[in-house]
Image (spheres, rainbow over the protein chains, first blue to last red):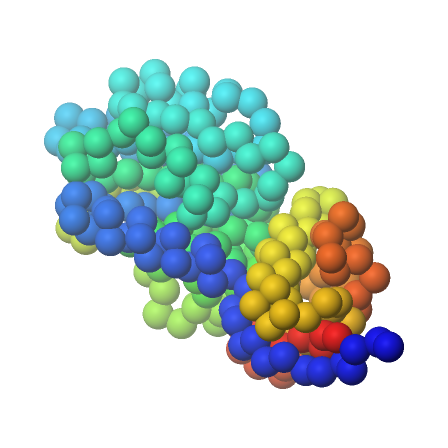
Length: 218
Length: 88
C-alpha cells in the first residue's frame, strides 16, 4: 500500500546556510578588528583598476589585503599583487558570485588580525552577488560612465543591498556624453540617500575623497 | 548579463533547496517528496523561470528526482523560503 501523502511544514530560508556562515565571518572580522569592504559591479566597470589604485594608496598608512573573485584566470590577482599587498584569487569555476564559504576558505592561512582593511572584489555581475552576504562591513557598488545612466534602474536589487556607490572612469565622462544628473537621480530613486562618489582610478580624480571616506568609516 | 550565468545562479539556489528538502525528508521519516512549496519575493534576486528550469537538474541523482517545485510568488519583499514539503 502506498503511504498517504502529507504536508510537512519547513519554513526555512533557502540561503540560511550562507547567512550563518556570513555571520560567523562577520564575528571573526569584528574580533580581529578588520574592516571588510566588498566591491560589486558589472564586468568591465573598473573594479580591478579601482582596487589597484586603492591598495597602492592605502598601503603606506594601513595594512590592506584583497580577495578577488572570478570564474576563471588569476589575472586580477596577479595585477593587484604588484601593489605589494597580500592578494588571493578565488576562482569560482562556473559560479557567478562569491559566497561566504568561498571567502572563508580563501582566508585559510591568513591572520586577519594583522589586517586593517580587507577588500573583496566580487565576480563581475550585477545580479547574483546581491543575494549573498559575505560578512562585509561595507558593500560598494561601482557604476562606470561608459555603461549607461540607467543601470541602477535595471538592477535595483544590487543597488539596494549596497551601502555606497562609486561612479568610475570619470575621465571618460565627456567623451561618452555621460549624463551626470540622470545617473545621480537614478541612484537616488532606487536607493534614497545613498552616498555617491565620482572617481577616475586612472587619473586619480576623486580618489582622495573616497579614501578619506573609507578611512573615516573603518 | 549572460543568461547562462543567471541560470547558474538559480542552479546553485535549486541545489540548496534540494539539500534542505533532503534533510527535512529524513527528519520526518518520509519516503518520497512529491512537491516543494517555495515562497518567492520580487527582490530575492532569483528568477522564477530560471529556478524552475534548473530544478530538475538539481534533483538529478537525489531522492527528489521527479518531484515538483511549486513557487508561490509574493507581491513584495525578498522572500526565498521553503514553506513546506508534500511527502509520502
